[in-house]
Length: 174
Image 1 (cartoon, rainbow, N blue to C red):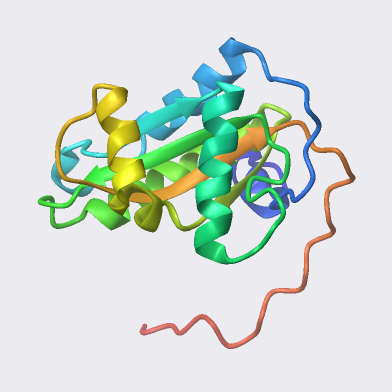
Image 2 (image 1 turned 180 degrees about the vertical axis):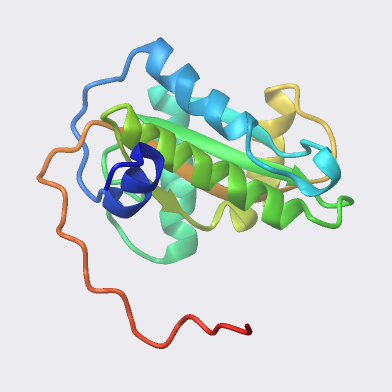
C-alpha cells in the first residue's frame, strides 16, 4: 500500500505482551498529541488524557481493572505506559469523541514503532470511589466517564498476522 496512514491502519495489531522498557517522553508525547488531534463533535475537544508512567499508580490501576474483570493477571499485559481517556458526561458525543482519541493514539503508537492495545473497564474504574479519588488527587474535577485505556510500550513478541476481513460488511447505495 502506497499510503502510509492507510498502511498503518491495516497493519496495526493489538499487543498482549510488552517489554518493561519505558518509551521516551518524546514518543509518549507524540502519541498523546495524535490523540489530542482526534475529531470531536462540534470541535469541542472534550476528552482528557491521563498519562500514567508512575509504576505504583499503573499497578494500582491494573489491580482495580482486573478486580472488575474478574481475573488474576495484569490487565495491561506488562505495558509500562497507560493513557487513560476520560470525557465529560454532559457532552452528547463524549463516548465517540473519546473513542476517536484512543483510535488516533493506537495508530500513532504503531507508526512510531510502539505497540498498543485498548483496555476496557475505565468506566467502572472511575465510577468507583477509589477512581474518583485518584482523579481528585491529580487535580481533575468534573463529571468524567472513563472511556478506555490505551496502553503502550514495546512489544515483547512478534506482531500477529492479520485475520481475513469478514465478507458482507459493506453495502453500497448508488
